[in-house]
Length: 212
Image (tube, rainbow, N blue to C red; front, side, top):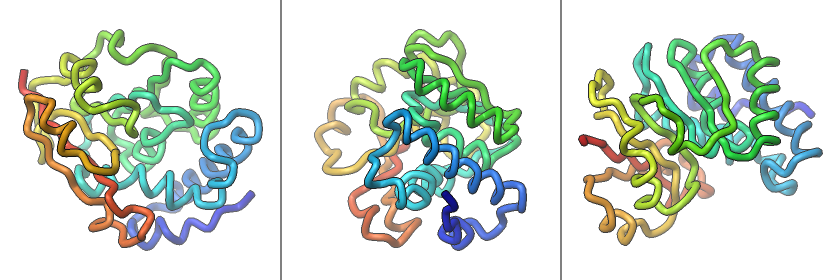
């Protein structure tokens, strides 16, 4: 299946030919794997470029990572948001984690076929991963207070990006109760301000700075 990735070109006009090729290949691989493993809704596959790849890249609009940034993607599933961001930021290091082995199998296959040398993948519970990272990214794997309890100790203290080190979380809906239940001061970036599509109404990139 070929996907029209014009939507990516519109919002990221500086993509190289290699990056465009990798996004196209990634979309195709996810569609192929989705026939075997339920990674995303079967009815949603035609909307993969917008609702999954572009959605992942909203993090890049909120936080354009500087070279050398190290990022862990928690509950990556089929590689979202980690692989799209790794394609966009080839000089950053990404570690993709999921507790489900068959999903990590998909991620490893994508990494190999895309020839991404800045990405590693591991079947593990993220809170058990011993390393520390500049940023932890995820797509709404659980309630934010629970996620913060898991991930605070995984964030490095020393920062060099424009935003303080911490969590970058893709989530939607009314977030006031979750925000009130954590000690940090989060910022919600409306994705509709980055990409003007109704699918992104009330969806956010949430940045939570972590200063232990």
